[in-house]
Image (cartoon, helix red, strand yellow):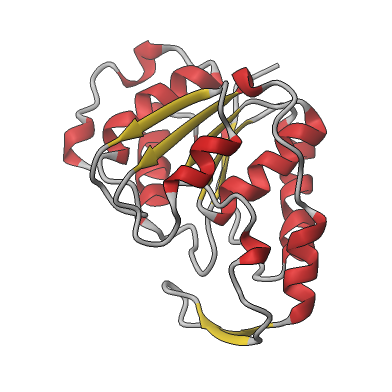
Length: 202
């Protein structure tokens, strides 16, 4: 089966985000764009999950790369399908973060506004999984100065897995571009594809 990657963005993000754009640019350079999916996810978890399940069906057995809420979605999908995953400052139990309030949201990239309702929160709760059965299938990249999520929650949840905790940084994960070769290698792509690419230019 051909190697492939499914990138899963976070809440109020999009394929235009910095990490997604960098990954797309590298895939174009390497000639593997057809083996990368970066869907523009619906804000409602149930509809987002339908999009992601369809992408997995299309790709076969992709490496999941999930950022923030995308890390939460990735964990559910990795457990369901037995897939490997790279999680970048992942949310662990996002349904517990909203305090029972309905909150107007704005997508940072599209400008779309929408209301986060109790049904959104219920749908997120439905995706909660126990601690991973096989934590070795996960690479969990955390930065300690994440201003949105407490990295220690992910550190505890994914203990026993491939935790990589770096001092400083932020929620967007500083230095992501330089780690793209690790993602490509984990997905099974040959290093020769990016041997001539300068990741520091991203």
